[in-house]
Image (cartoon, rainbow, N blue to C red; front, side):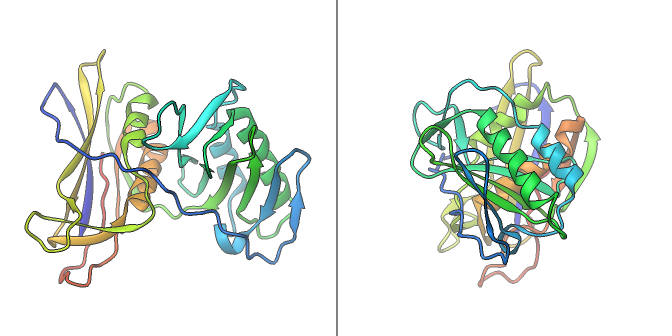
Length: 277
């Protein structure tokens, strides 16, 4: 079973190498909700799509996730991980402190915009799909930004996160550096030990962020709990790590997430992915 461990330690140690993959988040599907398409007051379009992004979101949780989006109107370039000259890597996600509401930005072919564009769209999504819906519905806003290549989703997330000991993280930029480094491809791949047939990503694998002023580091290690091979997507691992960040790290605590990954056909042991800080 796949295990991703987050470990905080003080001092400098050698860093394990890792590969940065181009990140292709799941495509934003056309809504299949019974709700009609609702046009916003801006240039973007909002669709309530509870059948795609979930129903029963808590307004207070989504309001909290929305508050975590910066409100700057400075021009920004959005792009997939690995692209040059990108200010905001996509996908990128903001999540509530209870982990149940996630707001995620994605782009189709390179995009320009600003955070205020996203905040404006998120408020419209809340107004149309939560304030006037019973039950509340997840939603998607399209045609955001200068060229209309940005999309924003507000969705249900079901975390399996447990917060643990308090740790000195030195601010959100410490963990955001790891979230930027971590691949977020949606296609499933095979993780496993050296010598196991079919393994595409050798484990253990670490991601490290150095805090130069605190002389400390934050390390994310992806490893297996029991079996020698497991199938999972980097996108799910990344999303779980975002949940730990929002639910635990923002409170100055470490944490873990379980029940991620998919049992491989050759795996004789049940287990789950556990990112731990």
